[in-house]
Structure formats: structure tokens, C-alpha cells
Amino acid sequence: MKKTAETKVKDRITIAETPKHPRCSHRVRYPGEDGKIRQKWFTNETDALAFVGTQRKELGVNGTNFGTIADDERSALAFWRSFSKDSTPAPPDLLTVLRDFKTTWQASKASVTVKTAVDSFTNHHLADGSSPRHVASLKSRLKGLADDHGDKLVSAITTGIFSDWLNGLRAHRADKVGDKLTAVTRHNLARTIRSFFVFCMERGWTLSNPVPVAKRSKSRVSKLATRTAPAILLPADVARFMEAVQNAKATLVPFWSLKFFAGIRDAEAARMDWSMIDMEAGEIHLPAAVSKTGESRTMKIESNLDAWIRPYAKPSGAIAPGDTTRKRGFAKIINSLATKDAKGKVTKTFVFPSNAARHCFGTYHLFHYRNAGETALQLGHKSNPAMLHEHYKNPTAEKHAAAFWSISPATAENITAIKSGRKTA
Image 1 (cartoon, helix red, strand yellow):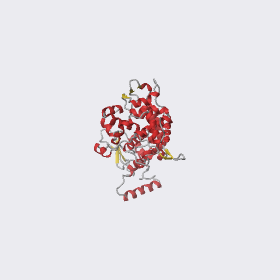
Image 2: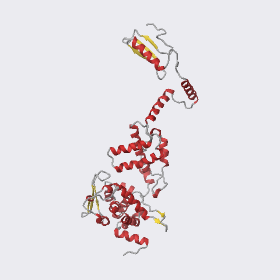
Image 3: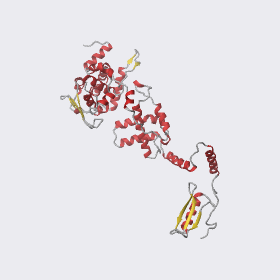
Image 4: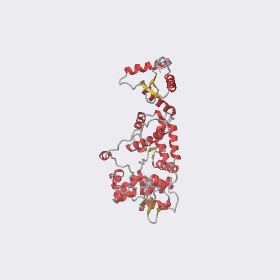
């Protein structure tokens, strides 16, 4: 077969016989997507000609280069040539740019808003068996992102947008209003949001995760240099708080007593049942299903804790009311402790530091009983004094330890009466 005008076209698509090839009779050469000439082999002329026809159609030519390019396509090509010629550094080639744009554009069309994705993420965890408390924690951590960027597409959230948003967050808690978030809070928040974007990537709503992988934690020397003592309440304030619990929401007395005088975590106390408390043996048996660490532990009931919870003890039943009742009760207690003027306007709020009850227990137990291993066991730290000293030890509280362990229902009332000027029996 000879090459003629029918077999060699001006668009660089050529077809030729290959008599010396051991298996194929024809070869077609054609321009690939990258502009380079490629070739394909065929065992018969019919298939070869069909392939030539397909290539011409895809290239949009009929014997002359770019014969069917529209005016706007010509303008776009001219713009790109001008842009790439004058840009420093040189941009990628046009084909790479278009491929990247295609991928990004398709992702944006498949994306959903951040608010919609957050709702889907939390509903997924709920349906997957996560506890309502865990789901509530996820909602709390994602609320800020949904409030500030809820109308944006998930695919539009970049690393820069996320970093600026995270750096702009400030604490809202009464004792830290306006402060920058602590490193631990930032880490926990970023970890949750990163898992949220992994969820979005799995559903094709975004191509990448804008939340950077967490950096390696600080060295021990660095941690020691920046460590601050845990925030706790003085015994007089603990006594005031416990009396306020009695007056404002008595059903919460066992819940808060266990937190202050047994060091039980908030979530653990919320899940406890009276059957886990042996008043006669003076012990609390926390099963693995209730413990945060997934390991059971036994705690001693100190004499003042006994005085606080014995009037409420019963064979079985939930120790704490529901989540909503606890939150409303706490707000009522804090409000009752606030200092108010003659018109009832709050002039000074009662500051209750985060995790204050457990921090009080760990600090005062360590200084009063002088047994770090026992204190660590009570806290559920697997007899790890290092964690105890790092997160719970507040040396300024040593002189107050004995007063803390003498707080009982009667002393709480007496201390409050003395501070307010009331007479006691």
C-alpha cells in the first residue's frame, strides 16, 4: 500500500503498511494529548482506517490543523501563551493546568456546604453507634466551623482558611474569656476537624484535607518550661459550692460529691449507678464499661464523702440526673454564687475552673495523704505518679489540704454562714 493524500493527512495523522513487521500489517502515527507523536499497530487496514477516523474526529480537524477551533478557544490559547511567556517562575504546561482544573471543577460540583457536611458527619456517628455524649462533643467542636463557614462548599476550605480560623478562636469560659486556646484544646479541635474532612473526602466532597497532620508534641524539657499549675478551688469555695448545690439542686449532691471527693470524671459520674457504691465496705467499684479508660477500678470512700452521699444512698438506680438537668442545675448553682448589687445585678461571677472538681481531688489528696501511687490509682492513672505531678499537683494548695478533707454538709453550711455574717447553731 502506497502513501497517498488519502493515507497521509495534513493533521499529522499518518497510516502506513508495515510489510516487515512479524504480526501487524499497518501502523498509525498521531499526535497525543501532550503534543508528542504516538503510534499504534494494527493487524488489518480496516481497523487502522477506523482508528484514523476516530482520531480526526477527536482532534476536530478535517485535513487542516485546528480547523474547527472556535473564536473563544483561540482567544483562550492566545491569553495562555501571553501569560506563560511573561510569568516568573514559568507556570506548568497548559495541559497540566487544564487537567488540574478539570479535577478541581468536578470536585466542586460534587461538593456540599460545610453545614450540610457537619450534619451528615454527626448523624453518621450517631447511626454508627457512638454515644450521644460523644456525638454532642463532636457537634460542639464543629459548631464554630459551621457557624463561620457553613455556607461555603467543603471543597472551598483551604489550609489557609482553616489556619486563620483556628488562630482567631478565643476562649469563652468565664475564667478565660478572650484568651487564646490552649495547645491541648487546639490539638483536640484540629484532630476532630481533620477526621471530619477525612469523612468528606471519602464521599467525594473534597479532594484534600485542609487540616495539617498534628506536629510532634513538645519535648519534656519544653513542657516543663511552659507548665502551669492546675486551676483549683480553695476549700472555702468548695464548701460554698457544695452548699449551693444542696440549696439549688439537691439531686446533684451525690454527683458533685463523687467528683470532688472521689476524683471521678464527669462522664464516669454521669454513667454511675448506686449499685456500684458499697457504703458498708466504704468502697466505690467502677466497672470497665463506665470507666473512661475501659478498665475497672476501686476507690475508697473518705469520711467526708460518706457524709455527703449517705443520705441519698439506695440499692440501685442512676446517681446523676440527665444531661440537660445537670447543665441547667450547674448554671443555677453558679448564678446563686455570683455577687450581686442591691438591684440584683451581677457584679462578680463565681469562677469555676475547667475540671476543677477532679483537679481539687488530685491535688488535695496528694498533699494530705502523701502517697502519689495511691492518688494515681484513685484517679485511674494506673499508679502513674508522673501524670499526677504533671497535671494535678498545685504546690500552692498544700496548706489547704486538711481543710478540704474536713468539708462535710455541716461545715459547708457553717463556712458559708461565717462568710455571709449569719449566726449558726
